[in-house]
Image (cartoon, rainbow, N blue to C red; front, top):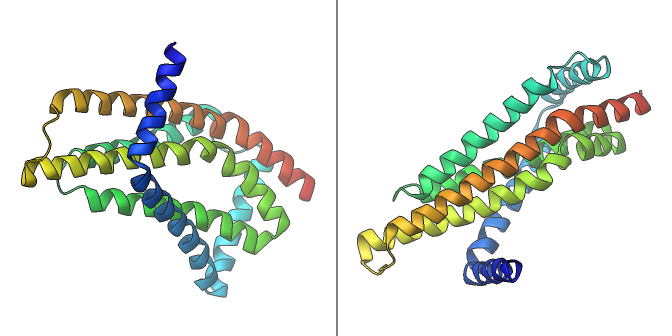
Length: 213
């Protein structure tokens, strides 16, 4: 019974906010594409410098000299949590809407640039490295960012309407309570993603690097 209730809540939520979800997803994909385009706009010298640092890092991974898994976990979790926390705070502010969209675009751009650079410099091997180093945790992180950004945009729009148009009669405290619960759940998912990045991705990266070296 509860499972069906949760399913109905999710379906209703997606139906009511489908246009915002579509906009947010398209914006994120535009960021990914822009990040990949930026790679092609780099000069040969810039690409060489980045590739040098990249090969140095891969050498450290292969030799097991990178930071401990615990440190990687904390670094990943804190970075993404701060990002999501900022989006959450911006969502309950009237002026935060455009900044939320900019942050989402930047997140997409970082993913696009990382994958695009690896592929442009290393071809198929770069694709394999991006598949094991970037994609595993981002299978969780990207949906979390899209959902939280969509909900933050929705709340921001409601706050704007409440302030300037006086059209929202929904009590604000229950709405903010649900909002807080969503971001706590997002934090738990980011912790799982950080665990994947810290404890699984380095081993996969080492296996790929050893196989192509």
